[in-house]
Length: 341
Image (tube, rainbow, N blue to C red; front, top):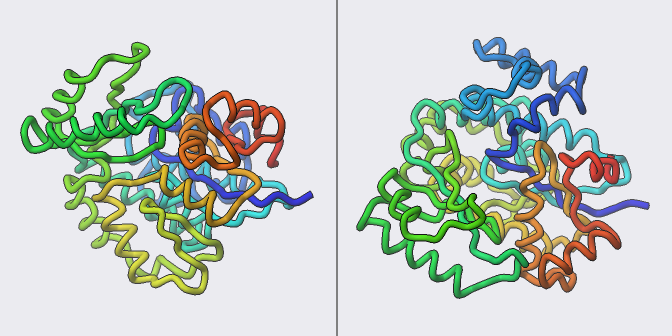
């Protein structure tokens, strides 16, 4: 029985200690991985198989943009190849870095072209990125939308921005807000909000102020380094970080290039809106989040709860529906992976 699915490509922060060896476990010997390794070696970079096969996870190696970004991209593209034949992908979206993966998964760039983009932008972020990111929840543990709490947090962000430092909404993850700014702005926010679960506010290591105007020089450098002919008509619809849909046969390639290496880098990435629009416009049977990791699953679920998709009202309702018939599969979860492979 076929299944109509939206494919979700994860962003930075999803390849961590527990993901070390992901490529070896699931994709050892894959020809595409060999091609990616050859591209990295030709550029004087450590091959992805060697990074993934390291004896131990080293944050200063595996979490930096020049290595983490292509590792995550490779896991995503190879997982996409591993899907069962009866899975019909009706649309593709992603979070932040995941937009570059979505381009390749939807055919808007070749798989090698996608790695070229990811490698370049990851390296630029690592070498020239400034500022940082902090994650903070805007819902309670039940995942019910809390508009008042969200509005209060965003009001605090606006108050800090320009007064105590630079602080912006970087990524909307549904139940979580990813904030980006300079050190002063991030420190002011951290001091102003209560600590939650001994985890939040959480500073993300080796992350710059992604999706803010601090990234404008990196976007410019990316446009100078990456040629427009890398892009082509997608074979599948793509939902971007504004919730806009790029359709096969009707995509303005100049606009796609400008968005990917312009606004997408320097403006808020609304992942929650992308998920909501994917649910409403394509009515899939399932959302499939590729590996590595499983952290994106909660954000997808919270975004679906926010728009009351299929009557999902809170975390308990989502979990009950998952046990009945999964609406969301994370390929990074060994138990769920078999559902779609």
